[in-house]
Length: 204
Picture 1 (cartoon, rainbow, N blue to C red):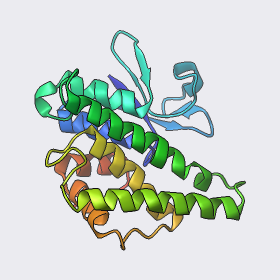
Picture 2: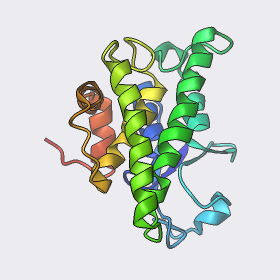
Picture 3: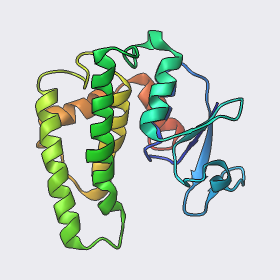
């Protein structure tokens, strides 16, 4: 299985999940602006959407979109506990969190990545994100992870997106419980492996 990624992008979430699940993956780095993989392939010939993450299975099956990929990976190793069983109310709660992260946080950062976004819109985007951070902070004041006391794919996705706060000078230190969550996930050995593999952290 190949995982096409860009360092620190949302593809970090499936990278973390694959390692947490103990699934063998082959990493292929992508230069998105140049539309090239590190092996010289045109990335849009692999994923016509032109962005990461994307996974390609041995039979050539292509799967894109973070929320879909991380659930697929978790379902390959159900004993990992990374996702509740399909059809359970807990699974729908997981999907609820993944939708929140995707729509309210992941896309909420989009205006901040675009250099053409007017400052007034960037301020508005940061204000909206702050309200979402407050909601998460309240959640983590009651439990260690999004689904309670068990780490799941939703936590890998949230950790990845929240890492972007530093790129945009968003100080989350006032959100004590959310900051503690970030530190808790960052300390996980498999998360450390993924960060090191992507060049986002140096090996100890």
